[in-house]
Length: 260
Image (cartoon, rainbow, N blue to C red; front, side, top):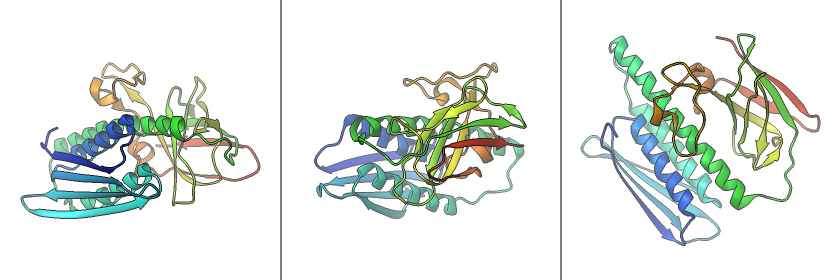
């Protein structure tokens, strides 16, 4: 880690699955890599109350300035995601961008893309983990498919992630495009998406030689030096400009246009 951020995680109450512990640590590592100002992160995941998890994150920047972020939710994953979102919002407010050289801006962009790759892998792991442990018998899903076009040309073998805007009981959905850029959204292992408004993120990573990065559970794009090929305004997990509205009861056939 470039800025040598110290990360400490404590768990109170009953234990959670080891895979979830790994995802939590990776999320904190990704945040630390994104914000150079961070010097220390202390996280406490309190599961003493079996009906409501509580997550507390204390972040330190500089020598002595600290800030605390808390979130609670019946699900530990949602409580942790909410606390992380508060931390990132605060860190973006603290970071003052100087009028640096173009090379520094390019370096920042590459680092952000690398961190995004890690975040996508973490999101995928959490998504699979939730499917395995929390798969419900039925969900009120709308069959959702579509096609990704960049400047009118299909984008093959790209990841499509939809994240709910607001907290309306929806779940994240994921899909991957085929050779013609078409995809099918799945939510918790079932075909379709819950009705509501979503932010859409499109990711397609390329190796330095121009070949495609093949997703692998054992390595992220950062591990192999792959770079995001989709423009930032469509591929950033927090700031993507793409939004989708899923409505019932009709099946959805979407066109996701990336016009840059």
